[in-house]
Image: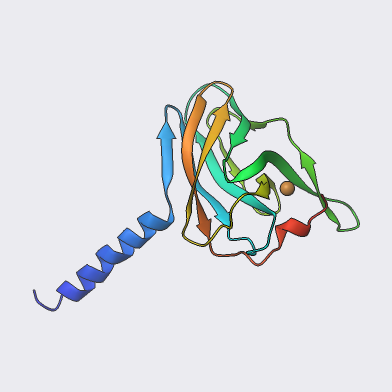
Length: 158
Ligand SMILES: [Cu+2]
């Protein structure tokens, strides 16, 4: 089937690219899907990290801390939009991960706020981090630096 080979090859390459772009880590009942940081400006002091957390178990959990050596402080934040359209951010003590649910940290919502970057983050880079859960304990992940999302997070209401 010589004519099928190129199509098959590109299909396999495509699968491989998808796998590389969407990584995940499963420990026990929790799956952390695609932890990622949109590439900040080279001069940025702050950045935001996003991911989805799936709790396939029957017990609620909570994300209580994030440790990331590339930032002096990593905090859990929630972007809130006031009636006048202005966005600001609130610190969250924890993010609830209810049993059987998927919680998404995404632009405009909850995020991991990285303050005081100790090194520039460039697209494609993998940034080690530890997520600390109340029940599941410590889970090591790697945040991938994704293409910039066009928003300069560093200027938002801190
Ligand atoms: Cu923030």
